Image (cartoon, rainbow, N blue to C red; front, side):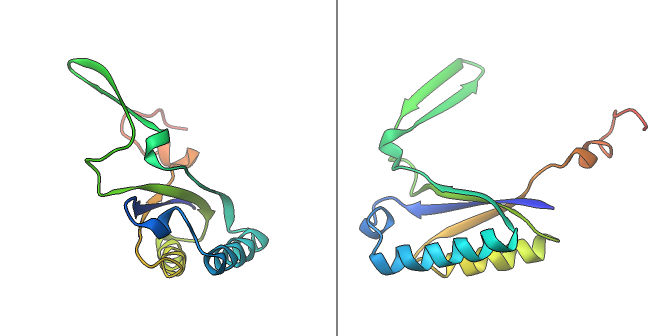
Length: 126
């Protein structure tokens, strides 16, 4: 199963965007371990929200809001896509990842696989 882990940071904390050399080394070791094991499929950090935008669509149409996203306490700091046996393994991995940060939240979400669509109502029988 594939899981997407999205980590969210308080953008106002200086250490969120100016990591220490020790943090960079710890993160590198963590990522290398999981990349070598085949669990890590992709991972990236993202720039601060002042370099981004949010596109929303509702009944009034499309609306684009340029960053920074001051209304949000936490913003996306990056993501990792992992291949693991189950949700429990993904959560354990997210806990290890979160332990690298002084403050962070990590959302763990299962990614749809092709076989998941066969179980949805209205899908043709195979």
